[in-house]
Length: 118
Image (cartoon, rainbow, N blue to C red; front, top):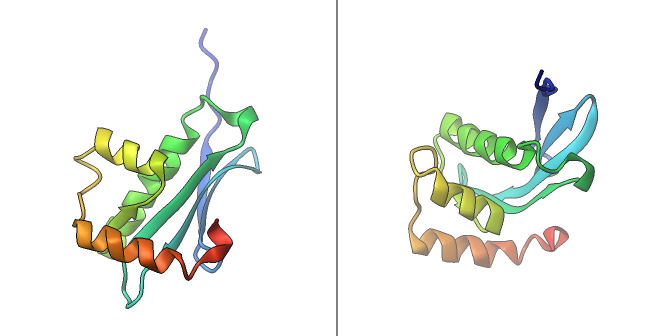
């Protein structure tokens, strides 16, 4: 019998720029992001991190999928500066619309104003 996967609870903490995945009430992974100016601006994924003990459970993928869904609900694009999010977008083009290189460059410049994400 296959082991049943626990449900992942994903919550957006817009104030701190973190989309957090909880597994059994414990933070298991996060997408660190910021919102580009001027608003309503694109959502820019900077880092995706899954705690090592939760690796291999699809948490990173669930986080990035929810990040794109969140942007779609808000009617804004996603700029995946995070290598994991960029690779996920490449593998899921039906869920991750491409953005212009100009928007990617602008997001990279704005990232400099968010030093807390380095």
